[in-house]
Length: 288
Image 1 (cartoon, rainbow, N blue to C red):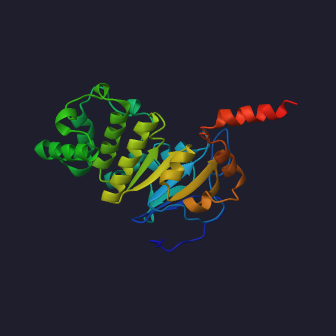
Image 2 (cartoon, rainbow, N blue to C red):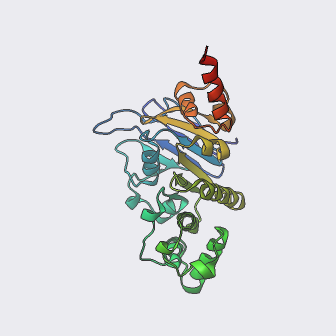
Image 3 (cartoon, one colour):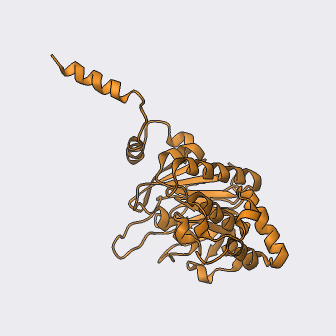
């Protein structure tokens, strides 16, 4: 991968670097907490991103906290986030409109991410007005384009409210709202975990198509090994607030595994259509 900026070594108290094709995002955040005083990440410089990076680990490993630190929703008590060499303010309220626009986020539960009293046109239209200054007919026309992009009919869905949509449709609206800002990076925080398998597969295919069309970069946060195996370019594995493994998808999924990475992979359920025959055979072998 061609690096966009000259790399620099950092001391051990700094950590994760995410380097995407269209820009550079460096996360240099020591994890300092009243209850847990551990560093989040690597002990030296490392590139962990291409067009699509995966942040993986069990629940409570620090994945979502990392996303909130990047977006400024959870201000860091130490360290910094650099975007194209520019240090972003730790608190999102202190960031400029342009800094906010370039990094958007799609949340895990669409029911809590969407205002239930607003129409879909208002939900998607708000970032169009805030970031791009679109109003009136121009705003509605762009909302219609975004609805078509996420495979929802504008005439049918534009005036609806979230309560009138299915779970998969709500998550697609969240995707459209993130795209409305014309971002360079979208952080996807467990975006399919609340959906059934078929709907989740449709959402992942949609995100892949949008990426091919727009060139937007994704940082996926997930504990689902199957999702990582299907879509990641680069993988970072976290455990208890620390990055314990990283590499390209092929490198991560090629044995021998790092200890914790191997444990994650072994916990993935496997479908065996002949499980009953195998079980009966094992039991028959125990009978003298």
